[in-house]
Length: 307
Image (tube, rainbow, N blue to C red; front, side, top):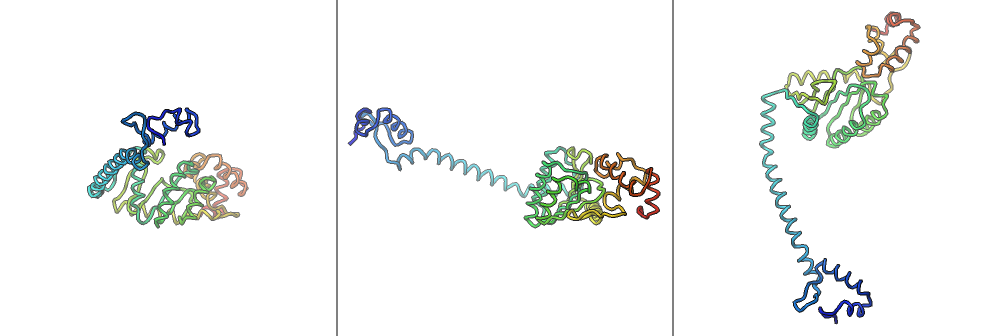
């Protein structure tokens, strides 16, 4: 039997180990609390149950204290829910249009609107290709809304069809139940969550600020505006009309060209690149057999393409 005062060398011989191995084993056992100093000298073995109680008791006390603190903090935060809802209703009652500045604040507001949305989300997305980061962020939010049964309708411009990332994004949302369409021209970016519309203060710099519109009359107009553009839209899965008479984006370019707009102005309005507009104009003039933009407009009118 091993006595607490037995030397390392004696234990090594008895156990068939080297003195270094014995010292390493003693160190590891001491770290686990399985060996403690003996009053008579040396060390005495402790049962694993007793060692566990001694070693883990401080950690368990710390975990318990943290859980109590977390529960108290959660209770205090939940107690403020009523005040938050009351303040939110008072804010909406006093001001039917709220201004939110700064990209972080805008994201926080949109996140809140998404969490509290119960019926529908309608979105106007002007411009051509959307950044991959923007698409990834929007996809996660939209899929979560769709999983809750929220109806989503997104309206892009025709020029977005040429971007593969946007096409994949639209197909993914459509497969999940969203409705996706494109149209030639959109007036501005707009989100309508149930009975709150989000509009950019500056359409060219959407991150600078946003207006939250809850006024019933204004909101009704914005919803009618969305329906107007939505009814003109083409389902994303459908192909644009082809044939002798231009359709889709070709027709929009022709109408603007006949109105005297230059390629740069047409590109800006349709959310396209000037080079893409120039190619479409060249195709239209070739189809009409015209040598000038004026002649192209005149022949398009005679063909009834501008009616």
